[in-house]
Image (cartoon, rainbow, N blue to C red; front, side, top):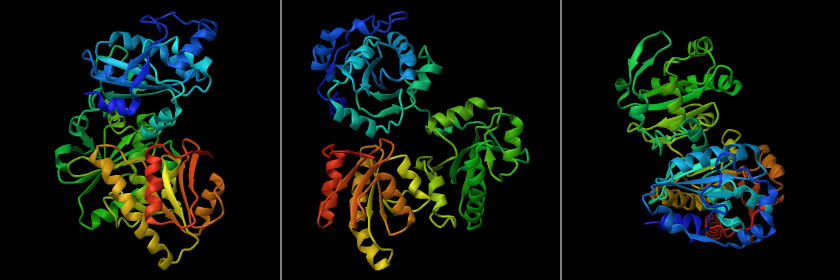
Length: 441
């Protein structure tokens, strides 16, 4: 059943332009190799391939390769991926999702690839894929289950580089209980068995002594940790260090009352970072008592809840924009409804209008086993709202409805005489289905 892949990639892709041996070691044709005729044929979609065939012949995994000819790291990684692809071809297919905007460059890039590609002119689908998988840089390689279309890992570039022979392919994530297995430490040197944390909420804290934002956040986390535990709730934190020496780790961990993965256990520290896709620090991932992820953004939640009243910080469908949670706008798309008042009687109708829409969208994606595609905020009249308006060049009017995708540097603004629940719901639906025209930020 290849329906999920067809929904993602369309019904047809383009076959490789250079045959089975494209991308082989030493096969690096220059720009002249493509030729004007090849560019025209490729851009027109000659030699297409049914997307449904990707899941045939025993191939269980599909890799979406986000890349571009103009990107030096992409050109450096492509031969490594091509070599890996030849070794795993009976189990793997790869699809190029190009960020090239020039057809000649796109065709040159494909000369090095023995796998199919998304058509060059299908720019909206490429944009939707980047948005769906939250691609903020290239090269990126997302591995999917060929039958269900579900994400196996978004960390494909690092995994192919670390395991070029595919000994652990397809790198299906191991359960937390297996990755965390082993002794944990307190700063006193006491060894603690992970089994003692049964029934506890756990915060996985990824940080380092050399990291200034970590040093700023740790005292805040420490205060919240104490407040929550003093209230009788079962809460523990496990520190996963990114320090560069045992001495630096020991100094930093000495300030912490919680547990840590031993610094010497490098493999376990790296595997935990991979398990949760940690791209930067500090990061705090909150786990439920069944070890499912409550939120990967607990740091932002704590900065917005320094009293710990909302522990264990289950994500809220709708939030008022603040200096703390505005960080999310730099990471993922968000809908913001700007109003020109901070009065509660003015804000309450806004919450009542947005809340059911946000809850419905989040519930639908959760039921499909997918991450929410959009965060929902409302903003009053303050400096934070003004700075966001200025940065994204939004009109100076209210109420104003906008979807901001700052990582992709685009925005969508709703121009309506009156904002109603129906208008907002329709606007969100059009965004999710790729029907809106983006404006640059």
